[in-house]
Image (cartoon, rainbow, N blue to C red; front, top):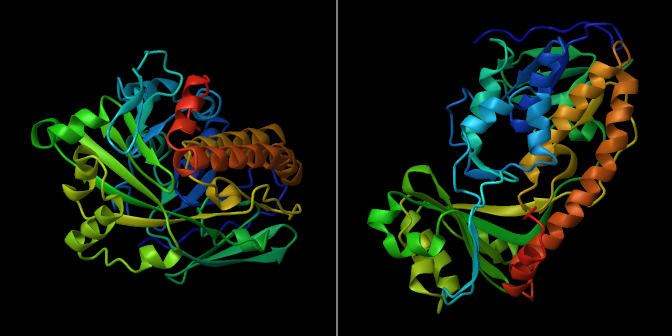
Length: 390
């Protein structure tokens, strides 16, 4: 493994390299926008390679944030090449499988669907070789004074930098430099499952899901699924439960875990519960955590955050889009203030805080529409009111 480079430059020096922790979508967009503007950056990522794990399912990329970010990165053409045609279709069902709303993909491209892994790939490929340093897990970070910081890694290496960006997600190791806020359990958990070659092997479930996204909902619980390429159905089970419910399931025993989750949906239509019981991959449980709505911090020289590290919120179709917009806006702010790191960060955060607070409020409202007391009819009303999910 190559020893991490040292970045000795003081903040405010023209050409100061930017150190980004985390090669998620937001960190990669930042690195790409900086590259477009001729500004060097290095991204450090704990995963050993881009192929180390599955990057998650489909994302709907919105015109007002995600597509804007990709345009700033000069990747609109590459983005259009990975769109899952027809994936914008949406339907809402009740627990009995009755279709309450069925909206086909109208082809307008307002929120086209792409696989997260494909999106990450085009971002990685757009960067110069060596921009992303893989297999470098952060151990901690500390201020050195004058806006400089040292980042230490678990392999014993370290870097110093005049501009440090935490793009390292919900459990950010950079956030403590700015804020004492920690994610708190939301009271809701998700369980992910997959079906493959669904039209042939699981026709009832495939028919229920339809051509795009399906939301089968009731108060306190839901079964949502996305149709991905090549007949893959990616399911997200949603349950309002105490934290010890999900921690009490042994997800290492896939059959037992599926049975435990399916038991929560007694009386639901079999074509819906088949998305759980017929799952062909080990189910993955996720307890949802959030940062406080309106999370912000006082300006600290030489360091900032983006994406979930800055504003972790309930999943509502907005998180990846917002992280990419954060990255694009931060990159543009840095480019607009050459040699003045603090002016760049102040300008970025002045827009970040109200934008992320508004998005977090909206995300909480959408989650309530999905599994709150008015489910599933609240989501039907939301769709028919003309607003996109997220």
